Image 1 (cartoon, rainbow, N blue to C red):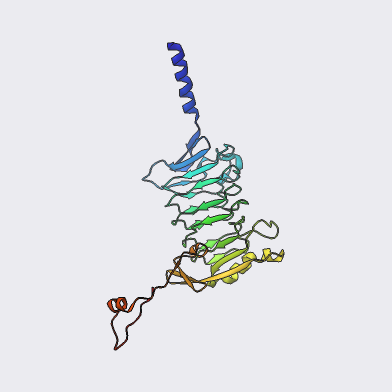
Image 2 (cartoon, rainbow, N blue to C red):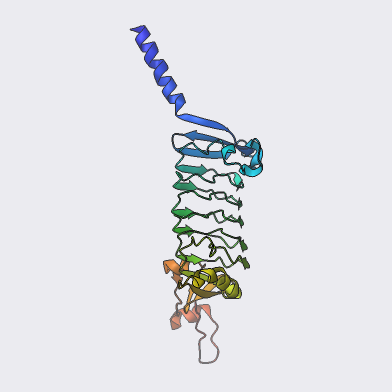
Length: 276
């Protein structure tokens, strides 16, 4: 009986340990662990800057050889980047078609070139702290929606959103958008139909979808205006461009005479009406 219990204990212990199939360093002050189909990357020391970079590559810089990333053929479907990591490096999770979910933390600042290229994401939520997205970072055939591109992103590079996104809102902070942001005539990959952008870069937005028009597809470039901290589009005010599609606009409210009297100084027989 004791032998049987010992054997069962060893088997259970082995199974528990076997759940974590791969673990190790994945960059500067960054470690990773694969448990089943979930890959988690976290800081090794929360008091130090951490980013997924090229330190674990063996023969090529920045994962440019696909076989260098130790999780490349792991069958991972879910990637969790924990708080404290500020950069996802070049080619980090490229060519992983099994990946369908990615969780990114507040505090993340950079997603470098081709970081999630050729995965199978259909949606991605981006943190408000992000200020850089590299070329082809989200060149994903399956990608249908992306939420929360912050104003801190000022430039959109080639192929970054070559995807199945049909309605795309360019952040108000973008001052430069590449002509082949959504693909090119040679690749003919993107499904873009409506592109919303700040009126100040309307010409660049037109250029970014011209190749699609050349193929006989109708693509609309729809402009909005940034006024202070708010967005004006279609005679309505929004807190940010992402609200345009959700319809979460700011309703102007006309104060009653009694309310206006409390918040405004009467001038003669009139009361200044305040708008919000």
